[in-house]
Image 1 (cartoon, helix red, strand yellow):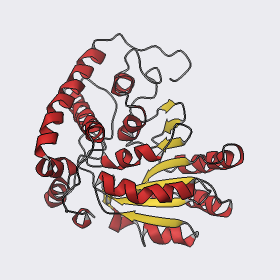
Image 2 (tube, one colour; image 1 turned 90 degrees about the horizontal axis):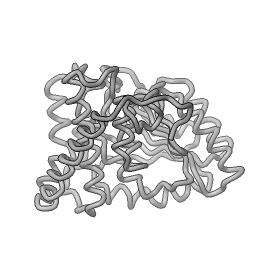
Image 3 (cartoon, helix red, strand yellow; image 1 turned 90 degrees about the vertical axis):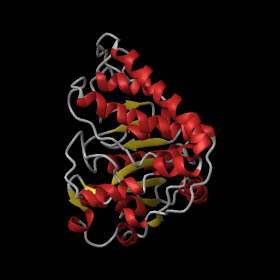
Length: 307
């Protein structure tokens, strides 16, 4: 999938967008570093290479919308709340954790945001919430992030069927990175995401660019239509720069190199070096300072509620 990504010059972002992209990138790199040093337990799934997806969608989603994330959801959370302190505290089990340290890397609940590590679980829940929103809060929507591997779950099709029948304000964002854990998508999925959406009469929009401004401009009118109860599947052809989890990357070297060649981080540094280098170092230093500060906190205590 990576070779189809747009290699044109990336347009210049505002500092706020670039800072958020860099914050997610360095947050994820810091997690892998902490795991590698044995300072974190359990598992984690980084969104390295896919950071631009939630950043592009950020201003298109409002505080009254519901966002359902998945196991690879740190970028979704940070784009929604800009809260690296709370998220890192959750993952490290430290005071100030979003969910008291019981959710960890994958299972987060805050306001109208929820992530889960169970593949396909969020889509039927999002459909139910979208039905509720249609009846009680017209103009709001439910956004759910899934991957290409999730299309092997029957719950996905049950939810799409209901979304089409009931005309739900449901936005399905598919981060298609071409590999389901360790299995190439082409080896486990017949047909296409677009074809499967069409089978239910649901609109499908394919995104092959990594340009945040371009993506945002194209999606703005489509997301506005979702708010009028026209469900939509948006498929991002993207790539997974890092391993599935902490260190289980068994892809051929060529596939990993292709992901690196298409990575927005290096491309943006090449296209806009002055802005990139002005912000990259300070953001990296900020994440290091956050990691040091959170690690020094006492262990979190579960008090029966999430943030």
